[in-house]
Length: 245
Image 1 (tube, rainbow, N blue to C red):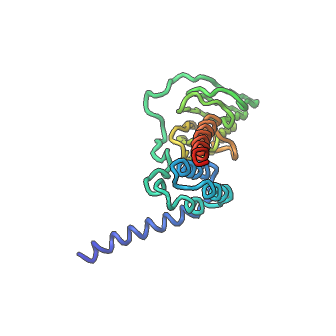
Image 2 (image 1 turned 90 degrees about the vertical axis):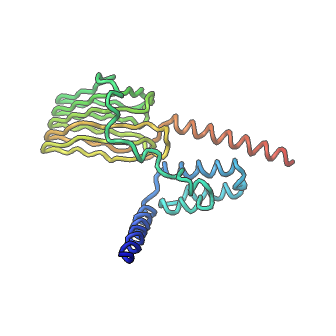
Image 3 (image 1 turned 45 degrees about the vertical axis):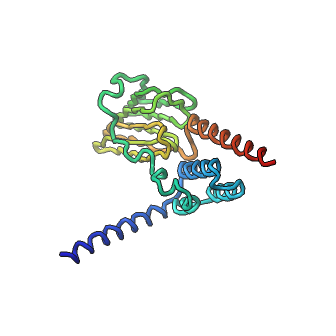
């Protein structure tokens, strides 16, 4: 019995190590690099890194290929061991909270034996309905202005095609199915706790519904917030340099 008790924790630890190893081999995304760069900026502001060390590590972050390579740049920093590097939206549910969003759509896109699209710089409401009947609908949120943190896209395809694109730095969830059709949502978690969450809900009947991130696209307001933080850090560094001169 004692031997069994000792073996079980070892097996569990070995399993966690194997999972961690596989995760380290995954290709790094732009959101992953932004997360590590944010930690390095804070370390510079706190005086844990010199300006030269910060510049060297940031250069390495930009060229890193895998998640494991990124983690090596923060292993000697407290943030790497405080749980801060965990995904900010790891607990995002597949559906929004009941009653948290309106039932009525802020906007609808309909294509019947035709094609329709929403793309470019536009304001995304809290609920958008897309209907494709013997037609195609494109909902491109990659350059949209997010006024709300939670956005629902209700998608129905009957002998048609609905394509949903979101920025890489938002969370994406989907619930639906297909009847002799295809319903596919490439779920993802944002590293930013304030990032929007897009929920795709619908059905594909002899049709297709797909949702995934648009490569290289990011929500502008998140990037602006990061840039403001960079400016504040740079101001602190400048003040420290002036004091030492």
